[in-house]
Picture (tube, rainbow, N blue to C red):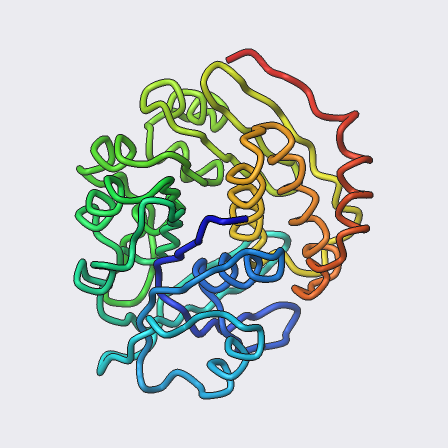
Length: 303
């Protein structure tokens, strides 16, 4: 693949509580997007900001994979940090600290015409102005919708709110990833599938709608498909949507094949969810086996 992938967004420190256990580790949409892209074979560079509290071991981990982190800047603000609590299949998220924003000067002069850029913001750290700036300079721009919808109060409680710039934002990008709740908040349409179709038809974007155990949908230019989940057992779901998006971008930018890229993305994500091991994304034979098993269950839906 000749294209270069840039991922823009905060690396985070995540405290994950599940079944009475607390795990502290590196996280964030930017992390999972970059690592999965690199493991799948893509040349990937990360644009991010962290605080001086960011553990050195995390940086060593990123370097060990061969990820280009030369554009990760240190700030006097603390690293963005979340607490994620999983309970009865539901996820509860709260913000502990937030690093400073990523600015246009942080991305200026790094974007070429053949670049693909994924904006993986988590808490509004990437402005619509940056999206506007890169949209006219990159080959393809993708966003994860969550970072543009999240607002937080003084206690760190997070709620999703449709911002006033949503129409302008969606008009500047090529690919949007969201879950069902995010799709509904962004459009005001309760049914997530109808919301995904609306975004696609209104803004002429590829919409990647992921719904956990219900699988996902992809919408683009009159095409709409439901791709069911093939996950047999869940080991780890944190980051699965980010991995799905990176895998789709990797496949689609290489082949231009919409459905095949979505099948590939779903298969890659399922390998991670079932193993909880990012290194398993190097197992091409397993991914191909998943793809072969999935194709017969995909169905086209009315758009």
